[in-house]
Length: 199
Image 1 (cartoon, rainbow, N blue to C red):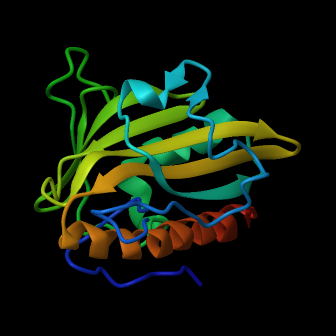
Image 2: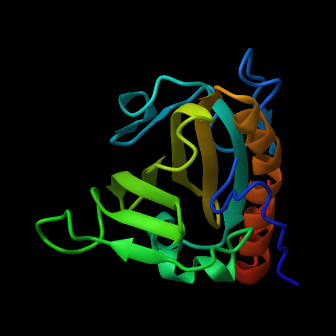
């Protein structure tokens, strides 16, 4: 059965972490740091996360999927299907590509999950990675970026779902406490649907 967690404080989609937040941040890594990329690794292929944020890795969940990295990235980029696996499921996904000259999905696209909760896509490599800049809760976080990196592994791929940020308010601290559960729920849903394993 698909794992669905309640929305807390209006927070929706992809999800992720922290320690007693706006004063100091303790990373919450819900997976084995010795599997896949090290938590200290912020560069993979053409992606350098430090080009998008200088904030610490707040949380990470990894899931093994029996498919190629490009197939796994196709799932990540198919926002219209997020209700199938994202925890908690978005209420109404709307994709706005109007800022892109080509008119298709890519860097510069905006994805809304419900009223007031929108991400801007700031990096997309269909073979391995995506970075989203959340435009919601600007007073709760600083330098907040959602990052997905997919690396090849024996028999398939490892999807790393990450959040980088610092909390700047009590609201951010409270939201960061719920994020790891949402991330883990999403990873469990993917593992169940595609025959994978949360690492």
